[in-house]
Length: 505
Ligand code: GLU
Image (tube, rainbow, N blue to C red; front, side, top):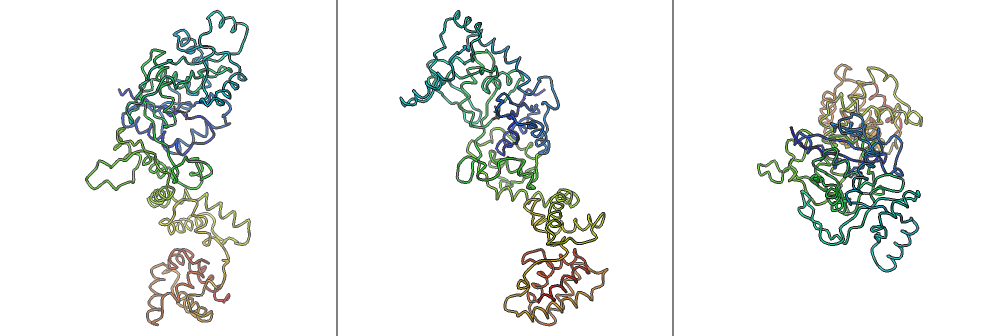
């Protein structure tokens, strides 16, 4: 059996960061590729950041993405509990063990003292660091102060000199000077472990084989390794993913747009697109492929698993390019069977319809309840499927199909240099031609054939007729072809709209 065990260890902030999506996806790919296990662990020991319902939300969004876990708070497993705040007894036990092994010490410094120490260091131009005042307190004194109930924290005993060599699977060996490592806090005064302590204890106890996390954690790596050493444990392999950058090369931030996967979901981005987009932000599956496949970027989750190799992961930062995400989303929308797409679009349409109803400026077309409504909506969506970049676009793009009366400037009906009178006459001819088409032949093809042969026979310009027709049917200058729109609207509604346009000129 594979010994590969990887974990996704988010803090429950209330949403899944778009950068974390990549972390969880790569963890998933390693687990699948190596036939290992994927574990979800909630790192919630920083109580200040706790958000109600955050764990349930997280599980829900991961499920929506289609990333299945083997162990976690909702499914259990033999290495649980999988929520750190439920593991406090475990951390207590291991803190005591570490003290015994000499890898940590109690620190009684008050927050005020630490604050003053830091500001003095700053004044002297030194980087802020703990001055190790409590590191060598006599054992007896420590015992006494603890007995007296003095508040204490636990700090890691770092080596005072030398070089710490650590290895990242992608970056190779990295060296850190011991002098640069602070005696960091492992257990806080409220008894809670820090990330540094809890993640090492848990990764060890949960038998994690590969820690895959963001590159912002590289400075923690030597401290982690020293902690493993102090315990006498074998560390897992470490892989640090490059940051996802914005187009200017900076950090992704809320100010520049959405950073939560939930926001993308709400806008109508599909999980397939988000995954495909994310995976390419740190992996080039085809760089070594000279068989002509190198340009192919569309990857399903199954294909990713098949092609994934840790060694092909990149260490340079990926750029978050929304245009590219739209490209993938458009692609996956086009691949959807119509029934499924209609299902996915429904809530957006309902929302738009509700809005239209509230405004009353666009009264709704009548008679679209039940079956007729579903059929109509499907036809509308089929017309837009090619163009949609995200599901929420459907509302704006198709509003005119649902309005009882279109609101547009009659000026819009006028094509190039034609006069209002000429346009009116052309629309009257269009009306006459369309009226002749029997209801049962009302398809885009027969509408097109009928009109085009009429226009050709008259030797006039196509645009002189089709432009006003399009505007009459849609109230817009850009839309699907007027023949397609007419077919979906139906004969009666199409003629009604053309008549309305004629009367407005
Ligand atoms: N709780 C950490 C975070 O949310 C996890 C980092 C790690 O994967 O070790 O960033």
